[in-house]
Length: 574
Length: 47
Image 1 (cartoon, helix red, strand yellow):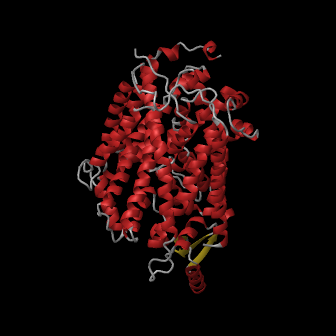
Image 2 (cartoon, chains in turn green, red):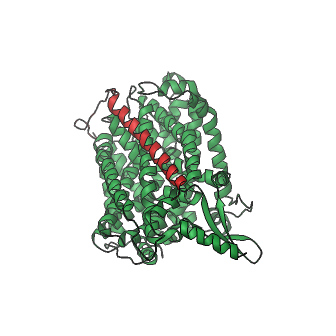
Image 3 (cartoon, one colour):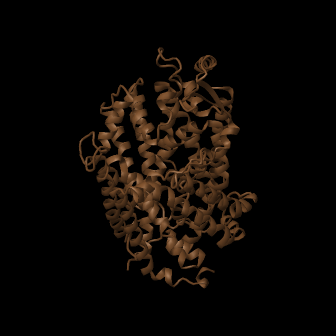
């Protein structure tokens, strides 16, 4: 047995930057703008801020408090912390989810991190001179091996292999150095650098004006309008059976006027104005807004609970939690919301950007946009380096729960723990990279672990805080050493509203994304993830599930062996 | 962008910026507890 050194954060600012770094990732700059634009800026932001207050902030404070509480008893990972707090043996097994999620997500997240580094390097090398989105998409496909399994394993400048090894080593060197000398030190420099780079890019984007005189509607103002306008205007055409089919969204005032004039003369065409109220009645919007808050803040990942377990008893958690979440929100709304879509619309127009997913926007549209911008190589490099920094601060946080779990459960040193987790994640990452065709392995793991299990873990966490610890005791614990107080209304929110809201959103999510229910028509069609497993079985999807199962079984086995967890009694907790 | 678009953008960006500014102010002005065992200099990752 190895004597473990009790690690801790070096300063309050350090832990805030580390948690903010964990939360700020690709989603802030790529996913959020796409979601907000799709559902209409005004309505989406209303649902977004309500979700922030009802689930984001409450679960965040619950995680910070429970993590610090568990840390005082010497537990730094979810199985030990849940077991200690609840005094119920079953919860140590539920806590395994809090280790499984970050470990599995790391396996594919580090692959995406390597894309960001690769793109940054290729911009510097002058290899990103795309004339259209098709060329950029072709480069991306070759870079990540989207066409065939095994084709991503090259080591050239335009292939992902070399960058993957580099980022894998970087992550493990930093994580080996420990909490304060590795994670905290890196985040102290990376986070301010990230914000400075974002401001430089923002300045460039907001001064783009109308770069192509032949397309006057492609300008920054319309880019911002696409993102933030509360009322959406869509042009629809009637098909043969009389249904109205959406053709395109219109943002530019001149184009809108022209479309309305054309609609007067054409009975098969109309311009529909979708108001904020109408958008707010769309369950899909609430699902998207709540999901964005959820995944953006890194709540329910098992990361915050581990990070806060390294705080001392009198360290503040309320202000630190709020500061970390506000830093994330700033990066998402004020930076991500003003950079990505305005830049894309300015060069491609609304039609060229609408409906693009996270990867499409980030790795197909934006490279083409930077390639066509003055000093594009520099700004392209800066943007993808920014994404790379955001990704590293996030991936580091995904490793720490696993490291802490192996250390405390197997009673091994950090060096041994790092080596063991390195082996597990290298095998998993190798699997994801090998099965690169259609990013099937990545997509399957992201759906079942990176989305489904996060809902489950968050629900468990808020129930433990509100109902097992009890909201009164939970508040008392949260306020120990706190620099500010949580408003009393949050007692009611954390006990009743957050769990209920979470369960409703989870149920909606399952209905929409598992059973494929369309809320507007009521039609059901199983999602591709279910089809891949049960209707038209896909080997890679099943292998991905098997990998998740093997890692979960390994962690459950380790938990069952641990005597620290077994001998914990009610008296130990007092 | 419409007037309402500008308004929503200003409200959204302004609210998250103000929240962050307030948090930064509090973090730097409220004294923190220092019970930390290790710092950058003392900590070793392994034994």
